[in-house]
Length: 60
Image 1 (tube, one colour):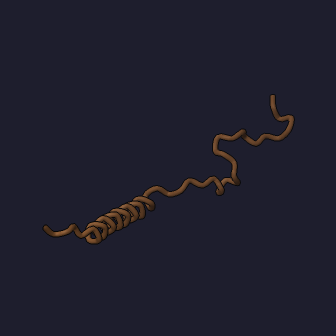
Image 2 (cartoon, one colour):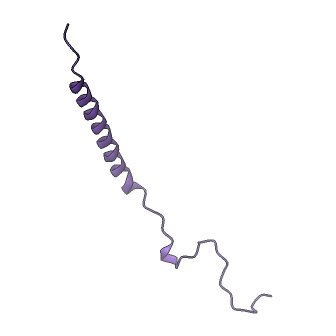
Image 3 (cartoon, rainbow, N blue to C red):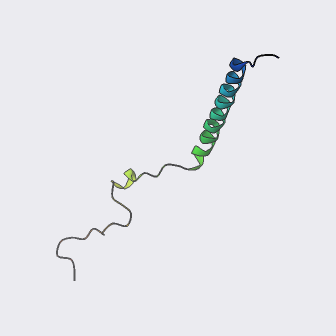
């Protein structure tokens, strides 16, 4: 009876793991351009639903 070639089996598992990792990274790069990051730096760092700017004493 032949002895099992554990080195071959390990290499096949490593290749499968590497291929899966590359596919995951590829899918991630294809997905990234579709979702632009949300940044609030364009409006001076203020949230959009903030209090309106009114001069002091203008409340009626």
